[in-house]
Image (cartoon, rainbow, N blue to C red):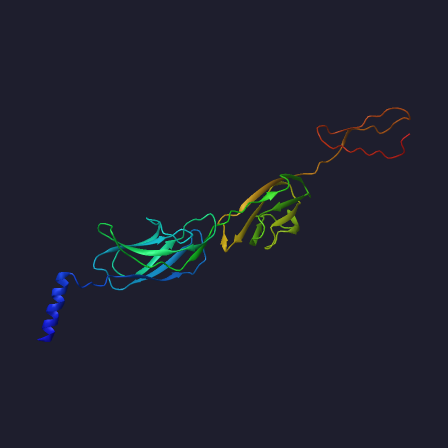
Length: 261
């Protein structure tokens, strides 16, 4: 009799709306791998629900700005649709132009039919997103003579510099005068063979690396072969003699042996 009476009281209370049933909750359990992250990184978010939802939901991962503030309609970076339980969601970190340390994510459930918001999880712990670097490469000249040196420079204070010379052969096509190491942002290169020659550079910044190295080309010119086009084999004292070499050149340097008089 007491049990029946208690059941009647609960039924009456529910009819009057005085009993609140617990709603399902969502909990983020992990982000794998752990941060910090690079722009565009693929990450697996695991979440659980307190109990399966009574109807199909679209679970969406929403991200804040770098200060941890969620917009009224936050950007969605991954989803798991038409589900009622917990699981894993693959998310893609957004592209950023500068490092931010206060990013958060949350998981929101929206009714699969109609799209209304059902519930939202608490936010994750804060994490960092870093930009993908864009290396630049400059040189002190764009043209050089064979056996001449060219100095190349990229951004300083980075790590894991990778200097690449393609199919060219060290000490045949070029030699390294200085730099061009994994810790150096400069390289002085002596070009030993002629033609268009290219150097590429890449590096790591805050754990992020560009998918595409940056290249710089120079043209290596052959050394001129100096000849006299007009040169007498005999000369008389006090008689002017004319010597002629190739025209259209620059920085002619004439050397005359003997003592002027």
